Length: 166
Image (tube, rainbow, N blue to C red; front, side, top):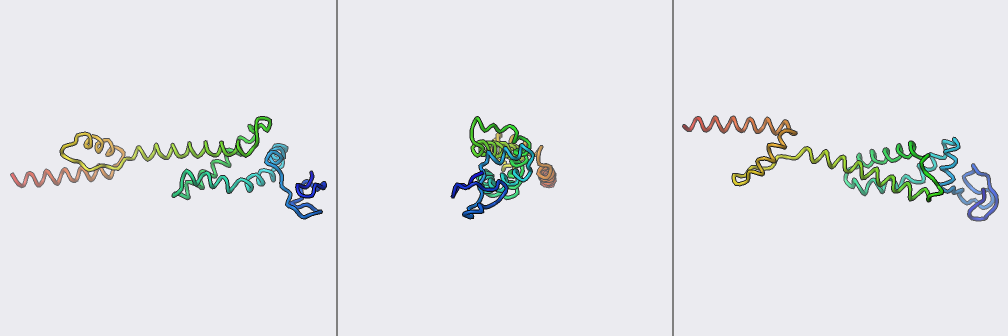
């Protein structure tokens, strides 16, 4: 391996050039190749080189939820660990492939969370002139047991007051 700064041949496993002191920067493709050859340290290097980028991608999907970002980053690296053998350097560079994969994982996670939130609709206020709103409330009560109990108690109280006024 050669130093990217001074061009002299350097030790492959060294972190710095012994001649000029420049950091030994391996390309992503070299690190993937090393990992596929059984060098676990290469995956750690990929992780450290891509972590800030990965966090930025996850944060763009979940700007106000740090726990979701952490989970998403973990999913991204788990996916990378499981699928790094699918990377083909003859079809392109590692970094664009990694970014696209990370984006796809974030999109999938975002859509799953959105779908769950859509299932748990908060009950809306009931107005006398809108039967559509009443239907929405009835549907949302199926997914919200507390609101169902509250509604039942309110109906009982209204019936009790109506019976007292007769």
